[in-house]
Image 1 (spheres, rainbow, N blue to C red):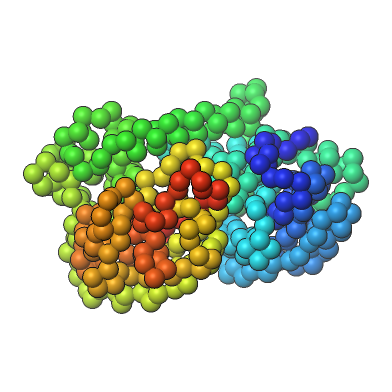
Image 2: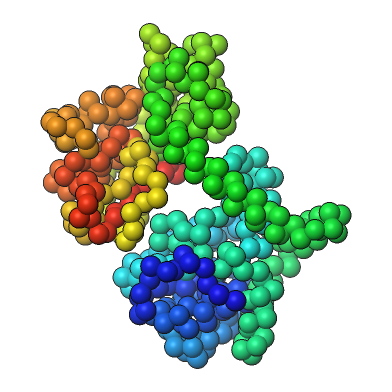
Length: 429
């Protein structure tokens, strides 16, 4: 069993964090990363949800020491209640990112296999996801890499057996009320029996095909403006949906129902469509414009400025801003609204996320002159009363106006060697 090419850009001796639970998949990844000559730091994330975690952490530490890596424990607290799996996953990735930032590691390696990919596709199908969800997990997203996505779970178990490694067993993997466990233990075996096929391979291959389609749609959508109602209506509906989805993705991706309502406005079938963040889309003289939707109650207080270390993550009001660094140019360039790319060497190691200042100006990427930040936000469809709550990533001057674009002075050029990615996502409850 070999690692995929997703690690080919990492030199021998490069520091990486390996998320390691002590299970067969993560132990196999730990071994293979060490054999590749990487400087491996295995991180066991203790969710404090069950007894026996100390034994699991010792198993990880022993394996790391045996194969030339190092290990440590990151403890997180996850309260019981609804969506425990999702909240535990979020806490786990946050802990791994903290460890990566503290070590200055180039990447976080996680041990998702082809079987995990198939389960993810089925989970997304049950949620009614579109192409992006059914495309499953990418091999690489930000600092996260999944080198085992082409490997099967049985291969990781065989590797552990040959090396006389005894993986730990998580009792949560026996509890059928967890949907992923139910899929793994009940649904997938029944599907394979009924179809007489290896369903994992079918679903994983389907995810690969859909990811190619999803990437193509995203690239095509980036070439179209969302505010020309007639042009939007003339597009193929799949492409029009993607254009609207990209437009409304600040601070969080819209629902399919919201996208359809906006398309109805573009067709002239509705006067306005309510969208997230207290906004609505209206058609004015043939153009779609974003305006503030009237709502009862007092507006929430403006959030206070917060520091953001690069790379790192912080929260400004209801928006989470994340930064990570890549060493290769993007395959597809984002439009700069909810996701942007800068030259990392043109930005200091720590910046501030804050609201717009009175009279503040910046030079938008691609513009020859400066522009008032408030005018840029108005152009982006942000209502006046919400502009103080729209994140501005800044040093003494703006670097990125979220929902609009980056400043020209931090642009990527032919001499760029490190690429700073910035993302903004709504975390409103």
